[in-house]
Length: 114
Image (cartoon, rainbow, N blue to C red):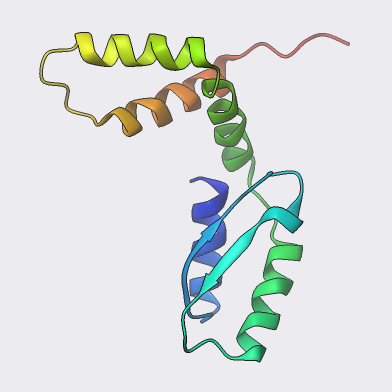
């Protein structure tokens, strides 16, 4: 699950009326934004801000984010698009292929030795 999906679900589970969320920089929570439903009260907004500030992002979400950031490289995007186009009648959308490639990349990338 992505960080945005994790935040969205956590807010909804807490009963905060939202339309959706957006994550700017994963490492800077000031760039995370919430699009509130018109019915959101000041109390709902306060609870949402507290959730943003205290949300514990799970390891899988961090890894997926890191993989997606790597997949933002234009060369990797071009390669993925070429592979996706080469598959006759693919069962997955291009976005699903990107997410899968990002997940595999983050799972199998080598961590530099210190």
